[in-house]
Image (cartoon, rainbow, N blue to C red; front, side, top):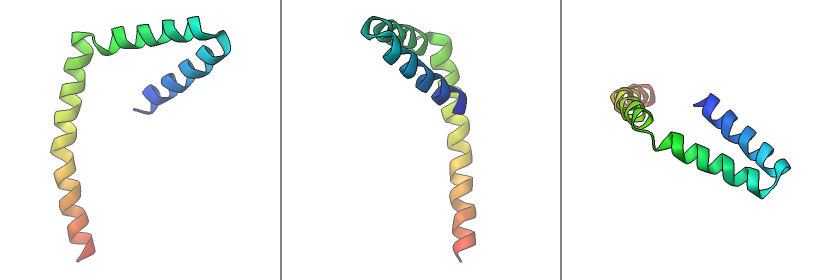
Length: 66
């Protein structure tokens, strides 16, 4: 996730320096990658794994509060 945010920030800065046309190109490329079936599949797997971990974290937090 950190790499994604870093990439997004870098894209923003480069787009801002290069002007609107470059920014639009970066946005188009991002959307093309984000909409790719392989990326969507990987995101689904990541969400499922995260969903498995979040309830555990909630239970651990409840124990700590008691």
